[in-house]
Length: 348
Image (cartoon, rainbow, N blue to C red; front, top):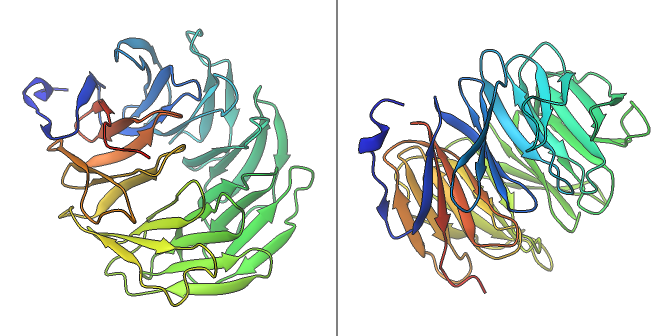
């Protein structure tokens, strides 16, 4: 992109490499092997970079009108990309083109989720939820939802899927097109996340709240007081902490033992504009956040309320991603950069 050579990265996060896309980088994801980083461009192109050097290995023609999201299978080197054309493309690092192109509906494909086993890929396109094999075969077309699907997530220990839209959270199994269970809630959900221990389902909401469901009983908890809508939520790997963001600050709830009810959350302050992306390590305690001002922070919630490491990209952050089993962090920005950092903070 014009002028990117003059851009700098300020701060204490040690940069490993930096790559350039043809337009804004809108989504990034590490392969389960850690050997590749995929990035989606607003132009529709899908990029593949070598994880150690940042060398561009592939640039695939992806999606007409723009790409939105990329996601790797957790068990093999199969990459899924979703776009504004209503399609999902499946790639392998060796291929020069997608080995499958899936028709997911007439709206944008905004959400992709691989099952923990890697057998299934769930796609959300407007109000349409579909299930595919890892080869691209259509396995299930679930009942159409009454409103646009705001998020999907798999239970970590089984093949059970959940979707969220205005008014309801719905549970699904691959064997049936009908829901197995529904939680009704009057409101507009923006994101949903299942705790790794499967105890809680949580969603961030348009009305500046976070809503908890105790899955076994259907009991509800609601956390209010956020100044803005809550679009970012993510779980720590042990299910002890839930990080939420509805403003420039991050609010972390302790969900261990009796749960978050009656507990005072931890507040993390560093960003000056709203959080745009946030993710816990898959194998560690570190939390990464990126904001609309272009600032990135790495935190150790419960240990200290100030970031261990920071960077300023001077362009709004669109996504952050941790490499599995390592302390490598990738960051995507609106100016078209994908940057890898080697996080040297104490991760124990």
